[in-house]
Length: 604
Image 1 (cartoon, rainbow, N blue to C red):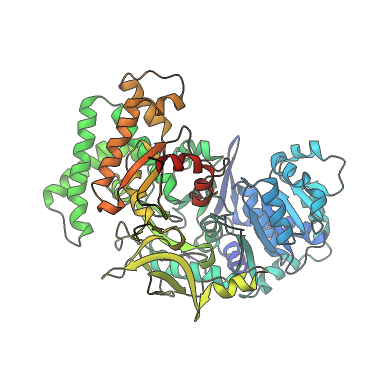
Image 2 (tube, rainbow, N blue to C red; image 1 turned 180 degrees about the vertical axis):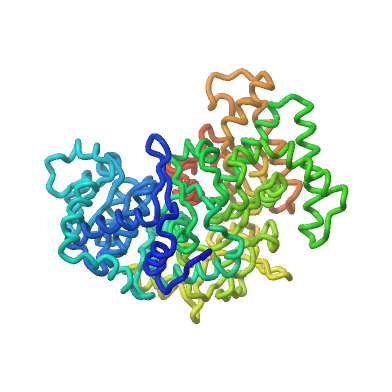
């Protein structure tokens, strides 16, 4: 059976365990790579779930997971559902104040945390968390700072409690999984908050199953469980990562967990994934690294790579336009794939067929580049409130620069101002404890996404920008900054490019540079510098970036062009607050933090 669909994700999980009990469903690295079958995963979930129930977790209770993506995240998630409770995922990058806010707002009863770092965040605010009863740590070393606390225990201790408790009612775990209703909550997934206070998005079993049903309808025939493996590295606190984690029970593929973000490249080669879930920033960085590596090659290899890209475009361009390539183009491209592009594909494991990408727009040129080298990036569109995708590009039915056509069950309409509105079973049940915000998010049964877009003649949806991000200049021109920013991101030296100009009479940009590519340029150009901050202020670097800005401006209307810019000495990071955990820029935060720099750009 290639896929399994039941009314709830827990019933789907039980059926997966029944149908393919010995299939390897999970793989993680503990020194060497360890494999776990669906049967063994079910057993570990059962004991952990009984442990939670022994702590008093009941129907509707909220249990938080504060951890990086790892095997135990999926384990804890299903154990929580097995207790009829609701998972509240919290990003591992959250501050102590963020964690305290979410734990209190969701009235979390039990918190499952990864390690000492995450435990310290909760203990720092422990007296402010009246609803929190117990903290469970995945890493036993965290107990070094909590060995005398009765409210903290290890996941190993909780599992042992569950082993003993199971004897009292051995069928309870499976019974709870079977009895879940489609309207029951699976998770309260808090928005990462590019602006304002995070909102708890209530997502039900039916929301999740609607997504999986539509994905099966569109690509089910392309999925072969015995062949497919994924490398999971997106935060499972993010809706795309959450759907990825639950999709394993429908598709029966092997979910492999990256050790950490720094090890993704090594892990790709080791597990050789066939499918990836990712956000555009991953491909933007990979694109820059590939181009930088090519520039370091001997000149004959650089020429060969450029030739390969040309013949690749000659092959794909007709296909993108619904036509057939010539026999010569087919032959040349086949040769290029086997010789020039094979080493690049090998860096991704050599078996990667598709990468599902969402969360922000992917520059068209980058999507085309990966298609040419042999990796198809299927860009989709959705929000936390729509349980991730409501549109998706598909193999054989994709268009770069778009986010695909609506999925079968989805109805999309556009407001007079271009705002995208969605009606679907995938749309969430509401914001937790925020009835006014919930009511304001809907109009005549349609969810108001806050995104601006248009649908072309072939039914593909194109995203213009976030409604709140549209820049209105003092001259009254409406400008979509993402369009401009994506033109800049195809240049390998650019890391971030944030356009500013709301209420101003011209546009400016805050720019950060890719450190590896820029440093290599400095060495090649014999630019002397003592540190990166000094490098970015050098006249040659300023001139390089000016040429990039000029290239971007050449593709824009005069009122859209960037008149001035400033290169910042460091990159934006999650830790410094400029990026969300899903690597989107926080515009309001950036404009506030760099107000002085922006004012200088408008002072003369």
